[in-house]
Amino acid sequence: MDTKRKVSACIIAYNIENFIADCIEGALSQKLDNPYEIVIQEDCSTDRTREIVLEYQRKYPDKIRAILNEKNIGQAENFLRSIEACEGDYIAFCDGDDVWTDPLKIKLQLEEMGKHPECDMCFHPSTIQYMIRKGNSPMKAYHGDSVKIFDTKKSILVGGSLSPTSSLVFRKSVITALRKFTVKYDLSLGGDSDDFIEIFGSLHGGLLYLPRCMAVYRFEVPGSWSDKDRKFENSVRGTRTRTYMLSKLNEYLDYKYSKEIQYKITLTHYTLWRRFMKVDKKTLDDYKKTREEVYSLPIDKKILARILFKSLKRKLKSFFSLLK
Image 1 (spheres, one colour):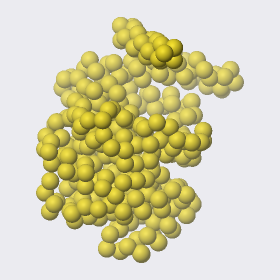
Image 2 (cartoon, helix red, strand yellow; image 1 turned 180 degrees about the horizontal axis):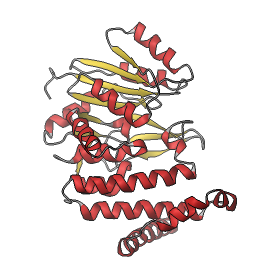
Image 3 (cartoon, one colour; image 1 turned 90 degrees about the vertical axis):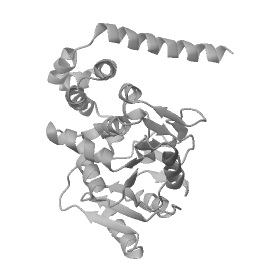
Image 4 (tube, one colour; image 1 turned 180 degrees about the vertical axis):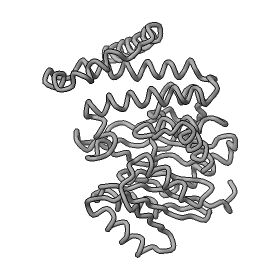
């Protein structure tokens, strides 16, 4: 790894006054030999988030650069603009409600990327901390105890769940390519940013996995995407947007991954169908138009059969493991 190349820690922040300080402290704790900056893009919070960010900037003026939006632009656009504002060749991203727990995190990822120069992106497992259900869970994105590389096909099939976003270190060129795609089709990533970041990060040499847990991913933080996605109407809207974006991605990549993208679209629709069946009657009555839209979503029957078969295998495996 060339230690002369600048690294940017990139943090986005909106209404996370209870978490942003932990996130910034995690970025400040990093030990690496490269030139290093911390860029925080604050999106017009209505709580004390901006005030806290500015306090840290005043305390560490040589390390922290705060970018204050004049108006709220939303999670996805805030993400893209924050990275475009970074001066580093490499970006280490962290959502403002997550936290890095290992001071060697960035250094270790850069060293591993140096061993695999074909890879544009590196990730690692994270501990999940539930904010509504309370408590922690087994690691998110644990793929074994050895270094692995996941190709684009795997990235498409698994979607944004392959890697925790706040574990990512990647070349800035990944976002340049992603922005080119969104501009060409006039797209807004919305809550699908994780999926598409992974896909574009995998296109050259795959996604590099480092088997060391070095962050905490906070789930269901009020106002975050994981919290908003719990609302049924947001799930329907997100499914419609995701389907359109995947179809455009297929076109953009010259239909090289048509099989995987069609599988992902069918899985997305099937997931919404399952959730729809669990919605209470009052919600169904309130969203009659939405109900018609859900029922009209196309489902590839052959792909659906594969999805159901895989689901059954997982349940049987879990059942028999309990009998041992």
